[in-house]
Length: 324
Length: 258
Image (cartoon, rainbow over all chains, first blue to last red; front, side, top):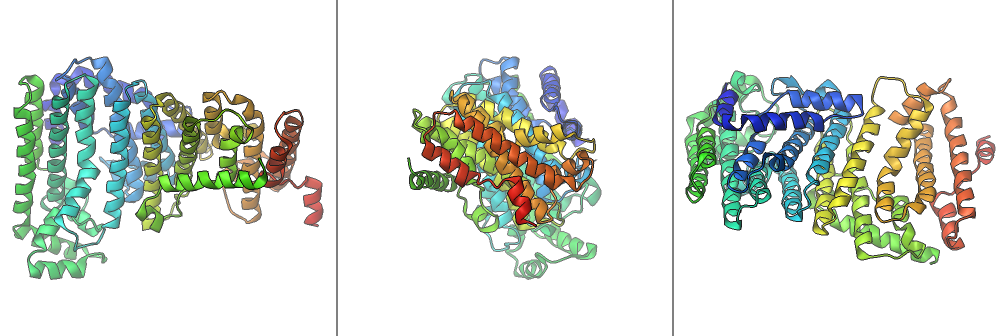
């Protein structure tokens, strides 16, 4: 339902998004029956296509040509898809978006080759563009996203990490790819440098707010809404902002200290979830998320008014208020 | 160029690649990037043979070595569950190395090579996946998979720099190295998808070892024939035949093993 609501916000882009969807289908076509099946399985699981949306919207601030914009929008979504299929191996996930994951349907090796194949397709696709600036932005982003994920694994179960560590991690893990989507859309459509920089910062702030909201929802949503047990991040050792804020209470800290990294029953898990819910941590986290959102909206204030600006604003507001 | 100089150059390139790919956490928890010396030798072969060499070609050679390292990392991901920290980081190592090769080529504005290598990775991934398919594969299919997996990226690099004439040497030699590794796995009782497909393609599974030994003989003969008529320096030929693919003829192997 939430996904439908979000898609309604950018219904103006429907013709372009339909074209991108078709291109994605062609792009994941393979001579290998297995890769073909695995990639289509992944594609059909759907998704919000938020990265292509940001590419297209950012492009509206420049010399917008749908056929040029798709040269960036399609590979960005492919890179995201490739990272998801590998992430499912990392997290040992059986389900994603209500469908079995590639690793669950086939095995880890097939998931690895599917991800490599899709990533290579993305690079094959985007190298139609010869402007090396585009490739500098994207390649740097890919490296930083990986660094973010590496740090996330390194920081697992570390209850004593700083909030700065957390923010730096989510910047690389989530915000950078959204930020780059906006910057690439702006660059490929030939906007001036200041507009491109503002759009990059807009994407960064939105990405930060989006991830913090995601981390809050892990505690506030029900198991059914999330499609996984509430508090899963903590169980998996991912120490997110609500936990970092809640641990400031010595009693909660002591409880978390005893629980982190240990096998937990459903009852014990729910006890942690309730403790976080009853603390002020979620409100504080929400306030931080809103600060990022405000910064994103301020960037839009300095950009030319028009339908793209309006849609970006609506998406930003939606991200701030989403329920799951 | 003598043996010591060749070894030194390969070592320098290996050090460069390892430095480029260095990442503290990956270093600590994974096996680290794979830099196969035989592969580095073939990436540098035109240089050893006195061909005109530039920083650009050498940088590209390093990126090809990095692509191989990226794909190799993902070959190391096993089916174990729950996933260990080492396994999680091995997945990320492959992705990280891919990002590095992309950035290096982007930095030198070699967009065409990024595209060509990407198409090569597509072919390699498709062939690797084909070894997991349930459908039967002929012996020719197995040979084609081995050829693409091991040599496609190297061929792309040679073609891109107008060095295609080295393919007739490098392809049989790299295949030789590949089958030698498969033979070692077979003898150690390790299972690989290629050996599995080969077993199914041959009339009797026990023929696999004999088939690989015959294949090694065939590749060695092919290579010595090419080298006989190649104007390459004899010391370089010797290095290749004795240090990269030290061959033991089938008859010798069978005698040795009684």
